[in-house]
Amino acid sequence: MNAHIKLLVQRAEQVLTQPQPNVPSPCLSVCVMDPQTEVCAGCWRSLEEIGVWSRISDEAKRQVWQRILQRLTGVSGTT
Image (cartoon, rainbow, N blue to C red; front, top):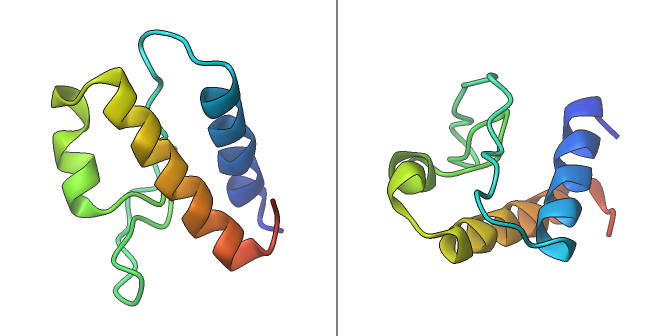
């Protein structure tokens, strides 16, 4: 499994199992949109998710993390 995918999976699992205020951004400073998946190759968020991140609630951020985890597990075959 790609190292940054493994890192994102670990971070997602931590955010989702240990809820805390100020949900961290999944950004890894690898800002390249994949034209096939239409998500960032670094953080696996859509353009819409990236654009609204700073304005959404912590609960909505956890929902984004959940979608990221679903995308990653679909690609990497991990759980």
